[in-house]
Image 1: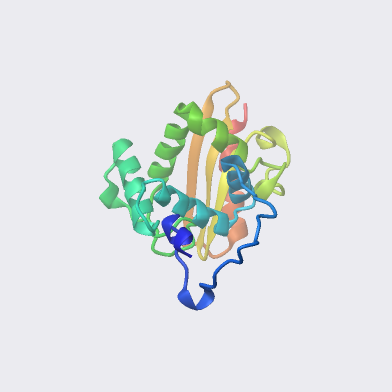
Image 2 (image 1 turned 30 degrees about the horizontal axis):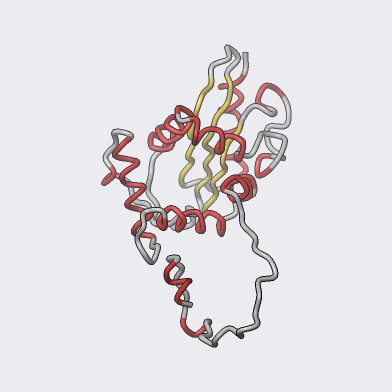
Length: 206
C-alpha cells in the first residue's frame, strides 16, 4: 500500500488490505502499456476510464504525490497560457470530459490541435490514435463515402444536449486543416452529427 501511495495512486482504505506478502511470493508476470496503446483505446473507442487514467498520469508527471486532478489542471493551464490564451476563461473539471462543469471553446480546441500538429513528438502519436471517418472507432459508421471517407480523423464528444467533433482533415488542395465543431443545446443528437459531417464534407470536397 505504501508503494501505491509513493506512486501517486489514491485508494479507499475500506477496499485495501495491509496484510504482509508471504516471504516465498514471487512475480508471475509484469504487464506494461505503452502511451500509444492507451491513446489508441482512449481515442478510438472514446474510453472514459482510459482518459481519466491518462489525466492522472499527467498529474504524476509533475512529481507531486499523490497525483491529483488539481496537478493535472495546473499542467493544462500552463499549456493554455503557452498557446497565448487566457486560462481563466476556461474551466476544466476532469480528464474524460464527462463533467458538466467543463467549459471550453472551439477556439481552444483548434489552438491545441494546431500545437499538436506542429510538434512531431505529439503529432505522430495523436494522429494515429484518432478515429478515421468511415473506417474505425466512433466514426466507423459516419462519413462512409466521398472525400471525407478515410480523410477526416477526429475525436467525437457526447453529453446530454451537446455533440462535438474535433480533429484534422486534408482539403482538396492538399492543405492540412484542423477544426472543432461544438453543438450546444441540441434536441436530437443525430441532427447535430449530420451537421458536423456536412461541415467536414465542405472542408474536404473539391
